[in-house]
Length: 207
Image (tube, rainbow, N blue to C red; front, side, top):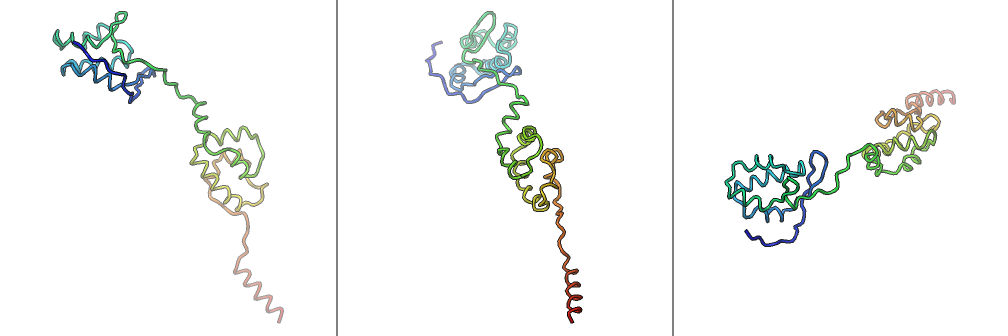
């Protein structure tokens, strides 16, 4: 059966098998291989393709299972699109690419650290005490939504506690997740009622 050669198609998806090996799916090559197959042969082809991506190789025993319901003619047309290599069968256009790297704590930390620069917090909080590198690591471990929440909280906290010496140290602030605390002002505001009484007595003494 003669087939017209076609240029490689543009890949549309990347699949990963259980060993985190990546494969690119080329729709053009898939259509080229299956356009002349019968319905039953195409079902077998699809199963072989999935198994190929999962294990990178189709053994003779597996091939026998996938093709057991095909006629001899259907088996022959299917074998045209398969390649035999060292006792294994494969679909030529399915080629593994570099393995997907496993996510690590280090790479996760790097990704998260692309949020707001630590110096923004350090300068805004304005109590530069403690191990700066350790505090910066805590900051970088936070999601950007939390970082924004902290920066919104700091002005309110500073207003409620204007004395820098009485504010929590930065490390304690992070350990306690203090940005989730209710703001309680330490500034005692004069009571208007008391002022009125003082004004009344003052006016009496003046008389």
